[in-house]
Image (cartoon, rainbow, N blue to C red):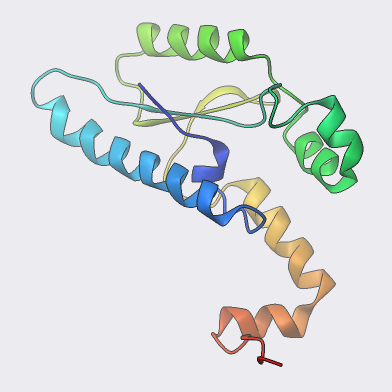
Length: 148
């Protein structure tokens, strides 16, 4: 069981290095899930949303209202023990579980198929509404800022 994050499933422009490492864990887990299955070994990536830790908690959210909005989109903070228990139950009870398991307060444990998550669509749509021309330019590769 590899521990990743929803940041490995959803683009997180505010923390690109963290997101890239979690995408790596997810990609590795998906590949190993297929390769190891032939030998009877199951490999999974656990992708929880926001867990109440030193990195994200009530204090950090109070200091950053945008972080609170993002955490609320996923249903609030998770407790680490609840994530472990629910994921363990899913893996033990469902030998056909896919490679990637999402864990959020709203969904509980859900299998993640490689596709765009609803939260990613919501974030992208908010960015488009805030700056439609700029977003279009970035999507087409022409949104680079000029050096001053």
